[in-house]
Length: 304
Ligand SMILES: C[C@](O)(CO)[C@H](O)COP(=O)(O)OP(=O)(O)OC[C@H]1O[C@@H](n2ccc(N)nc2=O)[C@H](O)[C@@H]1O
Ligand SMILES: Nc1ncnc2c1ncn2[C@@H]1O[C@H](COP(=O)(O)OP(=O)(O)OP(=O)(O)O)[C@@H](O)[C@H]1O
Image 1: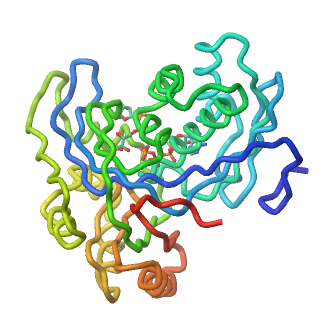
Image 2: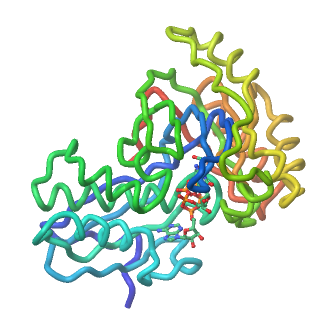
């Protein structure tokens, strides 16, 4: 029988959280000669996410549990296993083992669930093998697994640039937040492709992130910044207009925006109580959507 989220993990099992990644802003500055898009993004992590455990051993294996287990395969393509293989290729004699992924975040939703799982797998393997968190092979394995994995490996608010490999930590205040996904998966590649940028194209420069902003000043700055993947994602998922309208109609909302390549939208609130009240309203009106109240920034750790 597959494990369930409620099963206690055996003694000796290591645990990590895989927090949802939120792109508070996202500019696409151009497209590099290697085909990847050159980004500038302010990234924060949420107090919600997947959970991953590792029972260290010689053989690499993965079991799935939790509400998202049925929509994902525990096959070789799973980002947990891909990350483990990328690290094993760089660290001779790496102790591997059996991972169990408690999948809670919607898949292909712009909040980096797979990237967070891959990063959590790398952190678990680092702990099982006594690798220092700053070991360059962890970063290399992360980037080989996916563009969002290095940021998720650090798991801290940061400015992200390049294809996702240039990371500068930033301090952000804490906000309450509601994440809403209309349960329509979006392939990241399709959204980037819709921009129709030829390799080697430069279209803008990053706007500098002002230091030492108050919470109000940060909100003002955020309101003036875009997620430039939102327009192409809206063309693929028109229901985003309704998601945005539903969030914008909630009391106390500061800002509503799409994360990453979509289709998850987030809204910011003063605190987690305001977010929980807003989430109840949206979930009540739209029972088919995934609606999650949480916190962002400051620097969020996941709720137990
Ligand atoms: C949109 C973001 O979520 C913003 O944080 C990320 O840039 C996406 O990161 P990710 O899902 O880890 O992306 P990858 O798995 O590396 O690539 C998925 C697809 O998106 C394209 N891609 C990704 C990142 C990037 N900077 N430019 C791209 O063009 C890749 O060519 C690929 O076709
Ligand atoms: N552990 C995993 N969790 C989620 N998706 C996974 C996982 N392993 C492989 N995948 C595949 O990776 C793809 C991207 O999934 P993910 O949920 O990370 O997308 P995303 O939230 O849009 O990511 P990003 O914001 O980094 O672009 C999906 O097609 C999914 O099938």
